[in-house]
Structure formats: C-alpha cells, structure tokens
Length: 169
Image 1 (cartoon, rainbow, N blue to C red):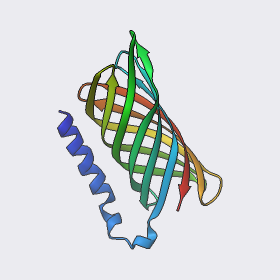
Image 2 (tube, rainbow, N blue to C red):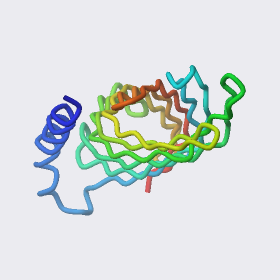
Image 3 (cartoon, rainbow, N blue to C red):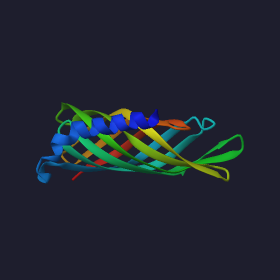
Image 4 (cartoon, rainbow, N blue to C red):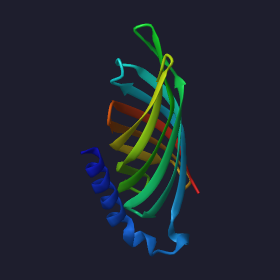
C-alpha cells in the first residue's frame, strides 16, 4: 500500500512540475533552509529534536521540489531506553500559494527515510511524507518558514513541526 501511495505521489509531483523543466534555468528560484524540527513519534511516544536543512528549486510561482536532511540533536528516554534520531532524508514536490508579495502558503508531498536508534537497536523506516506550512519574506532574499509534516512510515509514524530560516539565491 505504501509503495502504491509513493508511486502516486511521485507521479503527481512529476506531472505537476513537468512543464517547469522546459523553462530556462535562469527562471528557477533556488533556496536553502536551515532550522529546527521537533519529532513527535509513536516509538514509545518519544519526542526528538533535529537540525534540518533543505535545498529547493521553485520552477514556477506555484510549484517546486526540495530535498531535506535532518540530524538528531535532542534524544528522549522511553522506559529507561535512550531513543535518538540518527538522520532523516526526504524529497518533496511542493505547491506554493502566494497570498501576497511576501507571504506564501505551501503544501508538500514526498518520500523519506528515517533512521532511529533505541538503546543498542537501530532501524531505518521509509515513509510517505505530506504536510503544510507558511513562509513570510521580509525582503527579496530572506524569509522565515514554519511547517507541519506527517511521516507515515512502514513501521512508525511521526508528526514533525519545523521552523527555519530561508535564504533565496
């Protein structure tokens, strides 16, 4: 079921952004994010923290793609066992809804892989990720973004809340 959902999400992201690939590369708006993510997991209700970074390309005012990587910085103890986020990586298709010149709403869907350790046990989980957010720009190059993403994994789920600084190139 997860593979079918992932294939559908990937096909939708490619279909939506396909016209953008025909554009001149100079029309692509590149950006990078650096921020903090809070993971509320169903792994013994562990709450984890991570530093996350994103690199994205906005091919059209309403569509783009982005890659994301996060590394754990805050562990949690669950029933005497230390639970920690080793890393998380994902790729997303992103839809933007410009509300004003400096404020966008966004939605994203993608595929990710997350590795978590609990005591001496370590495992990776693939997931369908989807979420929403908002971004406010105070000038042409700088913005702040807040978003929520649901990681719907094969063996675990997480609600991820993120706040990040955005630099547009």
